[in-house]
Length: 185
Image 1 (tube, rainbow, N blue to C red):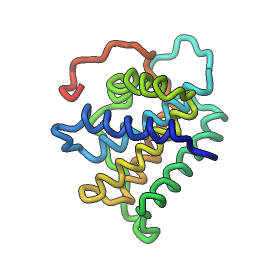
Image 2 (image 1 turned 90 degrees about the horizontal axis):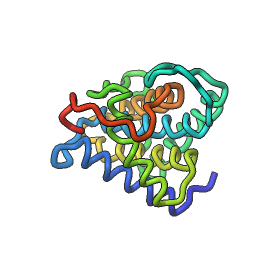
Image 3 (image 1 turned 45 degrees about the vertical axis):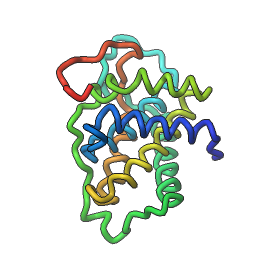
Image 4 (image 1 turned 180 degrees about the vertical axis):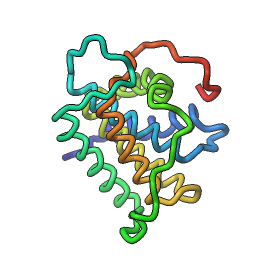
C-alpha cells in the first residue's frame, strides 16, 4: 500500500486536531488521545463500506466481513508507521500491558471529532478508506508522542481496540450536533 503526501498531510492535521480538541494546552490523557485517533480510523473505514442500514442507533455493533478484512490493514499501517517513527513495541512486554480506557465513549469521541476530520479529508481530496489510513498514521504519531506517559505496548493495545471498535460500530451521522456533557468538546 502506498501512502500519499495528502494522506500524510491529513494525518498531521488529525494529530493537531486531537491535541487541540482533547488536550488542555496540549496536555493529553494518552489513552483518550490514542483511542480518538484509532476510533476515527475505524469509523472512516466503517463508512467506506457504504452499508445501507436502517433503524440502527449510533454506538450499536455492526459485524461484517468487510471489517474483518479491512480492520487488520489498519493494524498493519500502525505497525509500519510506528517502526518508521523509530518506535517498536517490546514483544516481551506485549502480554504484560493492556489497553487503557478512554475518558470518552465511542459516540462522544466520534461526535466531537468527526466533522472536522471530514473537513480534513475533503481538504486533502481523500476518500473514506484513505482517510482511515491517515487516522491510523495519526494514531501511531500520538502513541510516539505519549510514550513518556504510557508504555508503547499499552498504546498499541489501545489503538488496536479502537480500530476494531470503530470498524464494527455504527457511528453518529456526520453533522450531528455535539453533546455538551463533556467539557473537552
